[in-house]
Image (tube, rainbow, N blue to C red; front, top):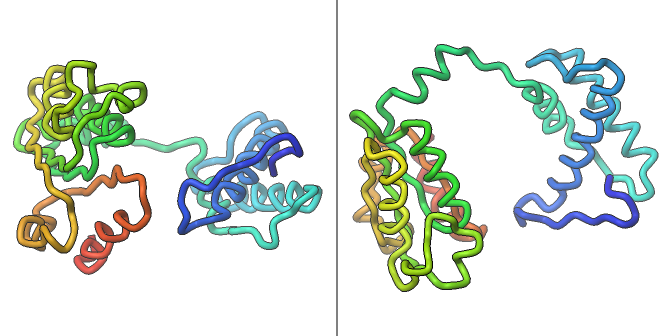
Length: 221
């Protein structure tokens, strides 16, 4: 848990205590690493159980302990903390044809779009669809790194797409200026989503995230 001089803030109002659970989980991981000189083994039940036990000890000794711990979350954190990736999967993941839609081209969206382009998503037979109905404001420039002072007043989606194309000319990007919701169901139909390999949500408010997630759940996406 945070010390008396520290505090955490919620980034997802649908999961109000998630940040405290994760903070406790990372403290348990540090304690595990200090004890064993390594991180928990990938998907090892014994190591994960020890991390959960350490988290319980940390919580019990905290000045403001949590009422309950999310053991599933803590176990999942332990399972993937050291990583386990097949080299062949890493290669194929970067070059295989992928179609993906990214909603939002703000601070989160700029970072995701850059990462997708550098990974090779949308190259070859793939395509990245991006949509954002906002225009670039001067206040965006300090955190939305794909935009420059001369871009102020331009649409975010098209400008971000153009900036990323300079980084990787092989990436195919289709920029939309639509809000995803009930008023654009004729554009973003079930057929549209079913043709995609993935959807990346780069929105910063819960209500709009839910509007995106609902049709995807209906399609078992």
